[in-house]
Image 1 (tube, rainbow, N blue to C red):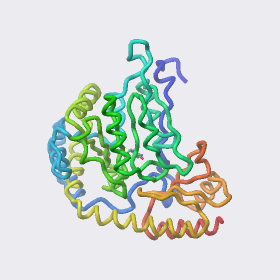
Image 2 (spheres, helix red, strand yellow):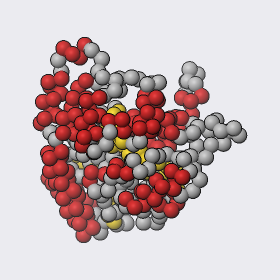
Image 3 (tube, protein in one colour):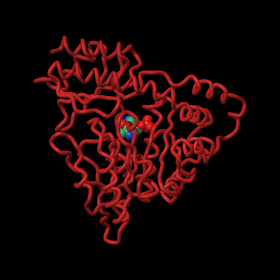
Length: 361
Ligand code: PMP
């Protein structure tokens, strides 16, 4: 606390990212990074862009990158927004589309809806922008009940697949929420950070549902968490809304190197399809082995597993794994305190993880 902080800074509860260890070498299964390297074409593109032109500002509209994305997804360039990682796009989207609590005549905006167990950045963005929200409990089996999101609200945001549960929602359910919320004139954001690993994307429906914004990242499926690049696809008016917020904040959110690298990544779908197939195959094998060991393993459509050890506390397993040099993620939160989120690493890394689990049990 400081006397120099304003009310906003005093009241916010910032997000705490997973550990990026500096002092010791860990098997890092805690932040859902891709275990395989980015495409060599990405590295070449970045190296090529590292030249004298860094003297100049980058293209604030990210035109070339948005063109490549538009081609890949069969949409118009005006339906694409590019940002500095999808976290930035999500922050802009909360600011652009969800009313803050001072916005309506009687000072009571309807709350934005998201699950009780979901990406923990959502309540943080709501706090930053002073947006009221209501969390909707997942079912006992940690699935989303789409019907729960068909109520009067300030808008809806869901990750598909959900994080940290790893469970995907069917496209029919996603579209049914989009349809309901469109009638209410409310925005529905689908955070597709992990969709490439098994969920059905809603991208093809952004024309049909003008209130639907899909948000994507290159951090996971394109092995570029270190580059900071993401994009959103939605109706032209939604994209214009995002641009209005961005241009009230920072015109140049993607630098020249990130623009070059991201473009090359979107173009090299063949490479990424291959490594991501490997990730999902490793996921399936790991899930099977952990189930055989007695773990409860939720059905994953993501590049991570959400697991519970038989009769052991989550915190305890997390600590023992850390001692053994394996980092996973533990959320000290109601309903999931005994679960661990484990990113899918290489086959060798997952073998070491499984062996460590065997020793612990
Ligand atoms: N959405 C979800 C559900 C995530 O788990 C993450 C990664 N922490 C992000 C968005 C943000 O990813 P990035 O900012 O790296 O694009």
